Length: 310
Image (cartoon, rainbow, N blue to C red):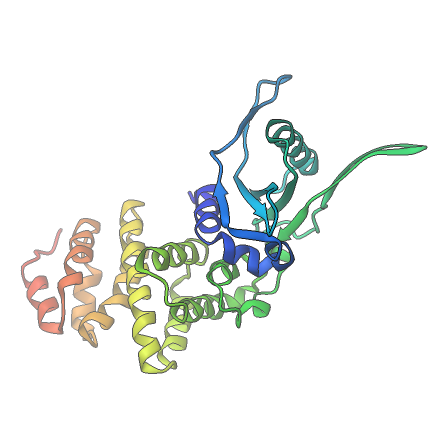
């Protein structure tokens, strides 16, 4: 199971300025960037029902050229929820009561379905009067076209394209564009891994899609291709391990057969047949050892040492 909350919190907290640049440049314009701090997570208890709610991300920042502060509350919602606007208002009111600071609320809807447009306000009204009209900003990813973000030199764009409105036939192309953009950003290894892990978590391709994806990579220029393949290799290695852990031999075998030619060159039919007969345990051993392979002889030597299981 994907831990949606963790992935989104890591992404936005690590690249908070880039997130605001991408979606809310008008807000970032009045933020003193050096003042940005992340507050400890806030947990609220519903007094009536005893439910506990945890606000996703709360940022404290100073208004530029002023001594006053405000909060930015970012809430990720991985599935549609009735009365979400009411919940956002509860967060707002409790944060406002505790900190006595202005609060800028943002909701990210990251689910694929349904694609009905989400509301961005919560209202309490009577026939003669509106008592409350609470508004918050909405980023609804399944309403955004990934093509609009392809040229954005922004790590958050590279990650979130994987969760936008994608036709099934475009999945390999979108993963390629996420990867291509990622290779241009010159991130340190830890941040590169964070973005790359986010992309691969949400855009896992099947065997046919992987072949289309690989063909896209083969067409890019050599320097960029080398950087791309380093990331792809890590995705495949992780996918093989996860396939083995889930007991899915076909999944692990498919990714192994895609990765091996990148490590050792062309696989002859007799070697492929030999690999296809490996047990799940033997595939696990191969996944570990292939990281050290540099040519086809390494693979042949390893296979000669592995007995066929009956």
